[in-house]
Amino acid sequence: MILERYLLKQFFPVLFVALAMFMLLLSLIDLFAHLVRYLNNEVPAREILRASFYFLPQSFSYALPISLLFAAAYTLGDFYSHNELTSIFTSGIPFWRFSMPLLVIGAAASLFSFFFDDIVVVPTMRMKNELTRILLNQHHAENRSDIVIRARYGQLIYAVDFFDNHAQILNGVQIIQQDEEGRILSLIRAPQAVWNMDHWVFINPVIWEWQGDLLHIRNMESTDEFREEPDTFRRGMVNVEELRLNDARLLVEDLRAAGLPFTTALANYYHRFSFATVPFVVIILSISMGGRFKKNILLMSLLSSLVAAVVFYVVEMVSMMLAQAGNIPPLAGAWSPVVLFVIVGFLLLRTAKT
Image (cartoon, rainbow, N blue to C red; front, side, top):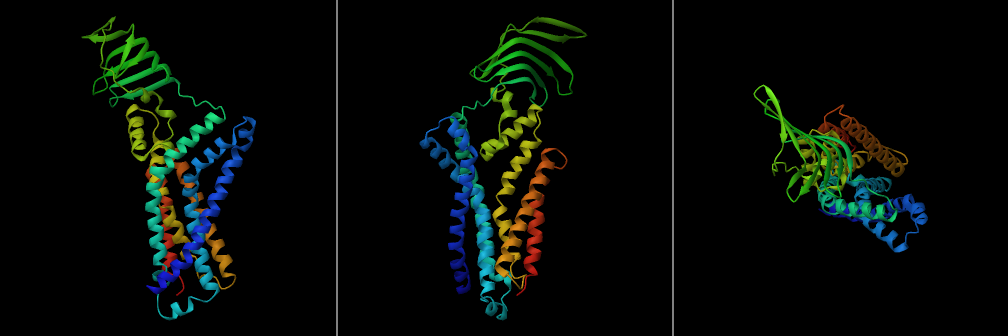
């Protein structure tokens, strides 16, 4: 217990300093990325500070894994450089047992990161993005043209020339109705459809429908049967990263039911879970690299840990690109780097010198 307290006493000050340093660095990078456009649009300093304030939770989320990596590598490297682990090794305590408090911290940080990102980071980043668009006079397009979606698991197919999101109007509407076996039952055409509280009201609609072997055309009477939400027609423009976890799941289900491409959204949805495990993964990699060098212990421990983390992020990026392109399943794209590096990290940790 004394050893664990000593380890944590050395670890936490480094972690807090690293968090402050990396958060400041990330905030400055975000600020300077927009600074020229802020100045060109004569944005007041107060609004710039407000946008930077909204970015702080995201910078904390990004800085946490890097800070854990740095703090673990620095603390263990410092122990090695001062020969403080010699007595621990000679007492027969395995290195993985001595490092267990850091593993617990990594697991707790992953759990915290998952809820923190969903509850704090997502809403504040949405506010930051909206504020930035307003300050920079950037208009976020919410209208769509040439839309084709499926609804009610393929029994309705909408073809819309243009959707006006602000007015909640569909222009140039065609709706194909099918039975469960895919046979066409009718075709509805209308120049416009207007959203009225909970259903679409068609303007001058005409319906073609089969009656026996004959196709009949007639004016369609008013109906409240068509209740697909207006957001259904702009699903492709919604960013999963700006949605809470439950909303992101609903988006994926809506895209799948509407027959729209959903692979990218599904991969990003799974990535929300896998990204939360990054603090645990990087601290395993950092611990497992300790004690493997005889010279320049501190420098080599830090360098090898950083290289391992960079390789992890690159592998994760490539796997996500493959998943979003449909070359591998979305679940594999999000989780395979995590599983691979956890296995490698534990194997290295078990073979660490004691």
